[in-house]
Length: 331
Image (cartoon, rainbow, N blue to C red; front, side):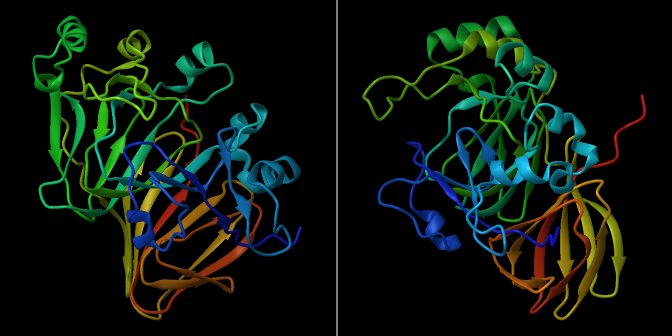
């Protein structure tokens, strides 16, 4: 199949909470407010286009239709059966706070949103203003009844758990987690391939049309995990360490594992893809070469599941994100 590491032209989203800071990450933005850059996406709301090699000009959805499991891997057989590319990678510029929201899991999404997936996600903080923070989970003592009443009163803040963050932090956000990214943060996000969001609170602000944005309170209250009380950032787990190369596990769920890979100048990492899972690599510091593909900071590449051998070589010292699909858990 002459498979190779794939790169893509991004899709931009102009949500009202965005700004212009994605230019700092090397994106050539259209005019106006830009909130998100979808880096690797095959969703009906946006699909990225291959910008290198023999598949140049293919949308990711077309490429997936042609390559199937050779692209996504047999561990994603469930996604293949639903005609879905399994993951989505974004860069976010939260110039202003996002809404307080929650995402459903696969079972709820399938029951209420057609063929849409649920949404487990994770964030890596690329830059943050002083005193930047997120909302993650609920305050101790929060009940669904009091939470509902606070939404009706337009004063939800006392029930929200605020979490300070800084550049380099990572946050795991399972489906069902109440959350909001607050202002002054740049984020790399890795998630299930879903665009389903249930807003419960939008700071009593108006949308671009001068009207309040829609809330989805009833669905959200069915989805929110109220047992997720004042969670903290989970430390990274050291997976392996050898001379000039460290791998740290940041987040793991049944859909993906994301690692941070630290590489000394000139170091390399050798891998082999046998058809089990795709891999997505992104550079957040330095630059690397992957099978002859140069990859600079804030660029991502998709390695097809049937690629075979690959080697990541660092030029200067580099920090990367590596995402793959774990072995299914035994039941």
